[in-house]
Image (cartoon, rainbow, N blue to C red; front, side, top):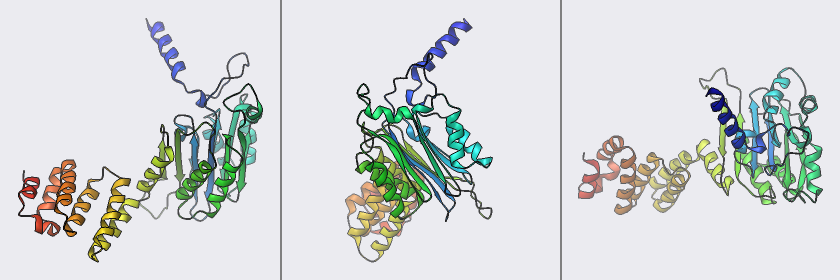
Length: 351
């Protein structure tokens, strides 16, 4: 009975292992049929903040979990095409031993019989990077029997403290646009990585379309800080027809954009600019639609603007999510003074 159960488990695992994430070729040396091949990514190091980051997009499911690896103070890795997921931890370990990215890439690919189907990029905390694109990755672009990848592009652009790379791309313009966007980008590393991904997609991106994306940014802990967070940005979208829209929303949440919008909204409201204040708050709620704090804040703004109906509507939304907190807050909040005698308001705040 135990043998039968083991056989079932192994068979099930074989069925559900995504081809794009496998690292070995089939027995007998045959070429693995792999429709999940194309990906573009960018790896980077910021000497000003000591941050290391990886941004990625692919037509494969869950690329944000499979492609990026990074360790604060050591380096970052993007493993893609027929991704060998051992490349990430192996490359990090070799960087810790003092090998350069070029030496690391050579070591891990020399040791891998499936290297011809891989693409990998490595960067260290000196800003040095190295990229390997396997022969089969390139050959697929001109193989008339490979209708998935025929006519695509595989390659990379390396710049100061970053490298952009991809395969099954619309053209070389994809990685060139990524490089240009990262070089000229403003804001945090995560925002620059996001801009680079958007730029790559604007030039056609992966020829097969879009499905998943992710951004990983790590930073060494400041010994003077009480923070325990090294992964300062760790977001991904595993399955979406337009993953960058959701990835941008998640990035905005991670970097505190809704809070800044609400701060601005309150300032505008105090100066009597109610329409502008409400617009800022609505944008914050679009980014984080389940934030009852924002719902409550928007109710206050509508009340200040004299819009009783929408003030009660948004107050109701906040109370529905956290009844005890927002009933108590609203019952004592001067912002709702003009609404306090209304039966609708009393029904909301009373038990």
